[in-house]
Length: 167
Image (cartoon, rainbow, N blue to C red; front, side, top):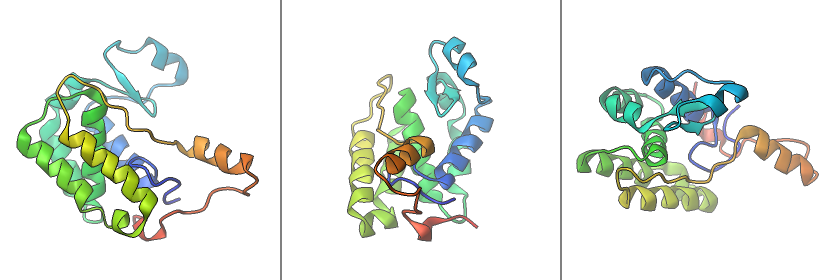
């Protein structure tokens, strides 16, 4: 499907990474009823109840998965950065710098002011990251974005960044 929003999690590729990260962290997707009953330390990201402990425990394989993608390693690292920020996970200074560089190397942000705004917010949050502090970067899910467009009279979604599709 591509991208429906310019934010960090606003496309298929980031959500593919999120699903892969959930598998690595042994974090199964929950349905709506289960989400309410899940671990009280869990941070629900699109139905995946990630915890700070899980992210910290699996940091090495998460970085490996994000960085080895031949199409979009910077997107994978940004999604990992989002996960670190959202859960308040502890990371090293080198890991933090790597996640900042992933934002700085976002080609789409160089071409699009709206994407640049989201990526700059990500970079700023990542530079200020403190373990134990959860940061929620605003993101619009597919159905939220679809509803927004249809409410404004648009016929549906458009692919906001067709160059960034995975093959």
